[in-house]
Every structure is written in structure tokens, then in C-alpha cells.
Figure (tube, rainbow over the protein chains, first blue to last red):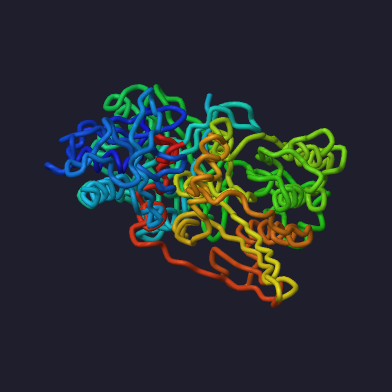
Length: 125
Length: 469
């Protein structure tokens, strides 16, 4: 069952990015073994989850989530506003509270969210 | 036996007509690519139906044209086979269109033979389940269509709709005379309005202040098939503006949709009215909405608007969206700060509701979260990630009813064209200034819904409306 919109699926396929669509009462997309900025975290890779609210992509996704939990290499601390848990699909994910009020309905898509995730990871490190 | 309809938007029909009438008094032909809208159960006919939505007009290449005259047109089928390949890849249905500039107003025996042969080619190429559609434009501007299925079964489409500034439905049979109940309305706008309204399947989303009024007005105007969708029950605070509702409905916690349906049935106008309890985007409502020819959006629910906004572009179902703003002045000022009504019609190529900033997508997210996961909603509210409910908006029956009148009048105008000038797709009434304005808006750059044609006529797709549900 396809969960992601066509443009999102096309974008991820063209970019060669592995993704897993999760269908259920709460829908989401998981990027397995997403590569993190080198040397900045205690993990080189992590699964990244984006929850897809009803009405996405007209409605913005909000935060993103990581598994395993990621700490900063420098301080061995969790990054700012990334120390809360969110239970999803039987796993306890690390919630990165990164909000976005710049979403452009009808224009933005998963590419926008991935850019935001990359920016958040860079800024945290 | 299936039940078929075809839907064009005006620009597509005009482009096709230009191609078919390229040479005066000579038959012309072209291909049309269609997407299917499969309706499991039409709420009024209680059986399945397929609506074909026009996706693209394809001219016959000059090198494939063989000969044409006032009585015939023939072309090489090389392009036909190439398009069959595309149809299989993109889940399209292929149609051939031609014209009879001097009649007859029906398919000829030669058409029957040619189309049976084309069906054979199509089924050989794409399999026996392949459908072939044939569209005929005849001399007085009428359109009729039929669907061919393996091996040689052909069936007339019940209607061919051309939708835009005007809404025109072409039927293969002559309309029955209008009931004398509508004699005074016929005096105003003629009998054709009645036959068009009688055939329309009208969806009304929301049966509150504006929705209950819209439902009553549409029925009294002559709409004969009405769907009313609402998830709410009647409450005592609704009784100041809910047409047809009374205290006993509030006491019995009757659904607003059921009350509207009951009141329409009591009119005795022969309206077939179907009430549905649920939100616009609920799975059990989707099939019924796909069945509608036109939808009045009478909800103040943002997620419902997001959903209907896309439905208009995917399925070419005009959505007449209405809104009423009533704001009390903030002290020390007194009186009303604003009373204004808005009626916006969305359908390609008009600008969508998102680009018009009519929808608050953040509120839509919160409304859905509150409905689906109240615990998480409360948690996010505590953490201030959601705004929470505000105070109830003021509502006065005369104004909610007036916006409903504006919306139903928009439908009447699109059928009969009574206005002396085009008002565009949105107009606003500012009650404080006794002023009407036509307002326009441009699509946002590269909006996938209204600026690009990506979704226009896409019809059935997974996920539904290419939207997370």
C-alpha cells in the first residue's frame, strides 16, 4: 500500500535513497541507516523517522525521530531539544523537536523535510 | 452492465472542438486520454458507476491522416497503437473523438464497424479488459459518447459534462418536462435549468448554519439528488441557525445530516437525499463524494477543505466553497469589526484554496490530531505545539443563510449564465459596507495542485488524492 505521494516516491527513487513506508493508524516514512555528519555524533548512521500527518503534503510534517538515540561526540550529551521519547511501531524513538512554520502547501515535499533534517543534524553538531 | 459518464474541463473541450472542426464542414478526428474514477456504489443509483475524467487531448499526427470529407474521416492507426502502449503504462483509457458536421446526431453504421475493429486492436494489444471510448460531436454543438468492451459490447454514456465558467451536461436523450412546481422558476431561467439541476448529483459537506441552508435551497431550486455529509449532532446552541432543526432533534441528539435529509424529504419535491454521518475525508464518504457532479463546501473544518480542494482537481468536481467571517470589535471599540461572506469556486484552471490562503494547514493538522489521538493532542497542547480551540465564532442565521444563497446562485449562474459580466471564481460580500467584490488570486509558483497540471484529471490514484489519509 503506497503511503507517500507520487512526487515524494519519485524524488526518493531518483536520489537512490532507501525508504520504508509505514501504513497504520499513524503513517510515516523511515530512512534506514541514514548517514550522519562524520565524526560529530556517537553514531555514524541511524534510522530516521518522519511522521506523515493526515493531509500531508498539504499539511506539514513536524518533528523527526532517530533510532538509535544519538549523542554529540564532543559532550556525550543529547543535542538540544532531542531528549524526549516517542513510541512508534514498538520502538522508542528519540524525538528531535524541530518545528517548521515555513512549509509551503502544494509546493514542499519530502525533499524539504530531508533538507531540514540535514540542517538540524549539522546545526546540532 | 456498467454505467458511464465523461467529464471535460472547458479548455480541454474547446481544444478538442478546435481539432475536430479544423476544416469547415469536414469531419475531423482526434484522440483523448482518460483516467477512470471507479465508484463502487453510486449513493442514488445504488450500483457501480465509472466516470471517465479527461486527462489529455492528442491530435492525430499529420502523417497519419488519410482522407476526410463532409461524410467521413479516416486515418492510419499507427498513432493509435503507440497510444495503447502509453495507456497500459499509465493506466489510461483511450478514446477516439470525431465530428459529424452535418449530422447525423448519432453514431453511424460505419462508426460501428470502425470502432469494433479498433476495439479488437486494443484488446489484442492490452488485453480483453481494455475499454475503448468513442466521443461524437454533432452539428448543433451536442456531444455524446459510448464505451466499447470486449468482444463488441457498446454502451451509451449517461452524460458528457463540460465544466468551467459554465456547467454543461449533455445527455443522449431529451429531458422530461419540468414539474409544474417549478413553473415560476422556469419563467425566470427556462426549462433547461430544470433538466440540468434534476440530473446533477449535488454534495453538501457540512449541515450546519450554511450547510443546512444550502441543502434546503438546492432542493427547492430543483436539485433532485442530494448528498448531505456531517459528523455532528444537533445541539441546542445550533437552533438559532439550523434550518429545519428543532428542540426535539437536539434532545434526541439527531445527526445534522439526518435532520437535513428529513426536511428535504418532507418538501415532497421528489428529491432523493442521502445523509452520511462522517468527516469529508472518511473512507466511507470518499466513494459518495467521487459520485458527485458538484460539491458545496459548507464546513469550517480545515482538513475537510484540504481534501475537497484536491478532489476538485483530481476528479473535475467543481467545489463551491463558502465562508463567513463575523468578528466583534475589541474593546474599547464597540460593534462589529467585520461581517463578510466569501464564495469561491474551485476547478481547473482556477487558483486552488491553498494558494488563496483560505485554508489554515496548521489548524488542519491540529483538528485531525484532536479527532484521531486526543491524548497526544492534549500532550502537544500542554507543550504548546498546538494552539487549542478558541472561543466560538459569532453566528447569525440571516448571514449564514445569505452566504448559502450566494453559493446556490453561483451554481445557477454557472448553469444558465444570468450575470451580465463574468465575476471570476471568487466573490465577497462586505456587509458593513453594502459592497460586493470579485477577488482574484494567482497560484503559488509551482503549486502541484493548481499551477501545474500534474493532478488535473488524475482521478483514482494510490494513495487517494495523493494525500496521506
